[in-house]
Image (cartoon, rainbow, N blue to C red):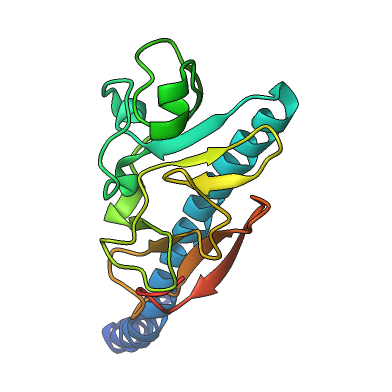
Amino acid sequence: MKHAKGFTLIETLVVLAIVAILARYAYPSYQKLIRGSRLSGQSTLVLTSLYQARSEAIRRVKYVTVCPSDYGNGGTLSCTAKSTWANGWIAFIPTTANQVSSGWGTATGGEVLVAQGKLANSNTLTSCRAASCTATNAFGYLTYDPNGIATVDSAPNLPYMCFLLFDSKGTAVVNGIEVQMSITGRPASRTTTSTTSC
């Protein structure tokens, strides 16, 4: 008489216990990997937008402005408050001198080059125009001139111009990413743990 082969209840419970222990220790690392990958992708969106804005300014010999906007989410074609970069942004070619100097509004016919929607996972993106990043030191728009030089809020040659991008759970889970513009306007990124400095 042949006996049926299979797992006993004890063997099954032992395997489940081992899987549970491994999952307990592997999940935080997996979560960190996923969040870090998402943050890296979002920093690439910021960098790509800035590179495109700068290259178009040089190529077309025109001013190109980047500002926070909900246009990419189906909102109006205009800039929003300087604290709302995480809700999306646009890069556009202004059509009037006022748009160049103020950075606000494209409803009068400015050509939109980039329309980015809201960042996923409620991640934060803040702008900073000083060594100490506070709400007062945030900037509302960034403009590239035809030479590719960046100014923020019409202030040229600032030593500090950056964006700080952080996961919604903060640096306890994954380091943030700083996207910084040099005085010549070239953007670059690096990891950071500081939420208050550029």
